Image 1 (cartoon, rainbow, N blue to C red):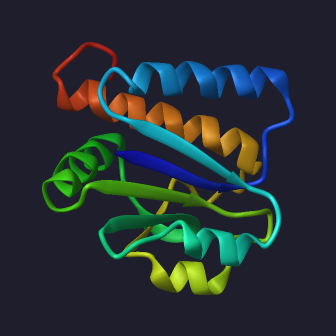
Image 2: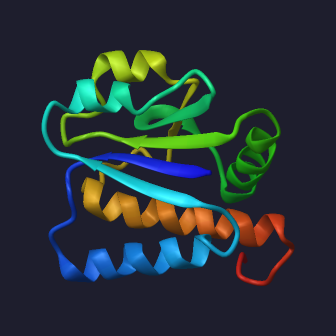
Length: 140
């Protein structure tokens, strides 16, 4: 199962619709769950993580990878872990204790993105990964 553990909720309808669309597309390949946390972020995030999960922090200082590497990472992690959890923090970033509990950190860019928009970008890349791993047309 893929989980997104995210700080905050999306307020803009167009971003909500984009997220819903990608969740629907991804669900054809895998179970997916988006967990939104608004208060006591650090504590609630830590409560949603287990030893069995492969935890990936999305942070600007993480390792940069391309879409093909991202697809391979998703495919390979399911061999060893029942869940992959992607963590998106607040505008101040991911709480330190949560970062320390992560197995790895990934960065999509040196640029800073609003976390609501970044959620759409992450979902799109997860969908793209499944298309790549299934040798289906989509990725170019």
